[in-house]
Image 1 (cartoon, rainbow, N blue to C red):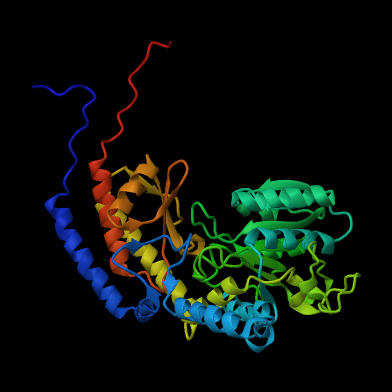
Image 2 (cartoon, helix red, strand yellow):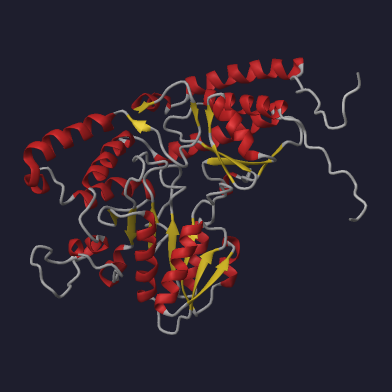
Length: 429
């Protein structure tokens, strides 16, 4: 009996050659894991048999966090109660934890404060930056490929301050900045493609035109060196629940260059950033230094969970993390090329190491369904509309065996999906 025209072809089985190469890749992955100097760090996290490649959205749970939070709840809150603001160090937590994040983003102590959400910190940084900009500025530049919230907030800040917003592709910022530009808000790593933008070059170009550089580090902090101090970045913000593994909704952070701190005028002057917070003075006097980046009462439970999570970074070099990140993503791309049926996926993440963050994004038809198939088989990534699969590689706990398995399962899922048939020719109607 003949097949009907719309019946899909049966799934293509891998050839014996591919199966032999797969066995070689599995053995190679195991050797790479054996030689990996960061492999022992995996034991610091709560993991299972799932291949988890979504650390670029939510990092895995560090093993030390549950015990620490149990102590905070039972002893610091349950027994010491109000005394914990001083005796347990609650009051100084935003700066203390900021100092733990600082070396991971290339900052000296006293330049990072933790608290509020990324969105709130973007607002503080953009409005604070506009207030420090030179007279005669009429615009701010916004990364045209930015995560949408950054664009929403930048436009709101511009309306409040009477400036215009001009979206610009990151690679064009150096050519587009003018003496009328107050600042540019740029993502260090593109959330959708994983492309790494040129932080040193863009920052230098902005400064040459008299503008400030405000960087969003959400997809780079904890995955690669940033070098905020070395490259004279003015302001930066970032979340802590991705590669820093702080937990869902963990507080974000704000970086202010030391030479700008006492010029920084927050648009949200809360009592926590007052020079005398317990003086209850109706007139606001900002504190000195990075403390003026605070707003209101800090979220202590989330802050202290983050602090415990950051302990996994003890004795870890961010340069070693970057080396493993590039090796993992290279290996994954090689495995995808081996396992995926020809023409079914295409990397939108740059192959050039100088342009790559710590994720691989693959363009794929019916990406949502493909990711559902992966998750059902124990490989967790995510996808972005309309057609991008995202795989985040967190070098502290992601193994080369994980990378090989994810690519192999991706190939299986793709082979089981019928290839899309071209639309039949119509009659023009």
